[in-house]
Length: 159
Image 1 (cartoon, rainbow, N blue to C red):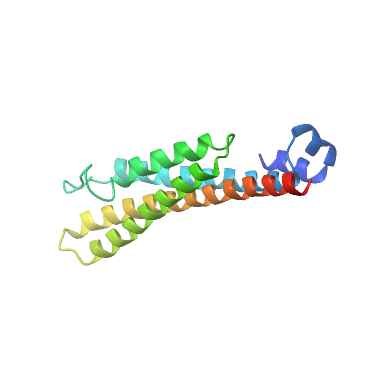
Image 2: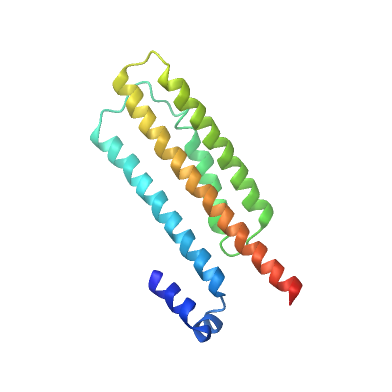
């Protein structure tokens, strides 16, 4: 990906043939890095679940796990907007992710003062932290998509 972006940044003819601007190519490269970071944290979650005893106190109906469906819905919305770029949908996804991230931060604070077993607390804290970072990277993705769309619209206005 970086090689292709580098070619676009170096050559105006490649820029024209691919139908993307140099600025947009740079933004798309940031988006790819963001997706890579989400993958890293997803891998860390899988590794955690495979390497350590999952606490019995973990529940599909409470934090941090309840954030997963929110993130899934939001990332689907963001990915679908790689092409259609509906600002309202991107903003909705971003708002949901911000709320989920704040919920996880509050959960982590409460976890630190809870009376649960220390091993369980550490496990849950690591799960929450990875999910919070995945949400944060997804928020970054939403911002990149909004920047690209805003840039495109401003180019149309001034063209």
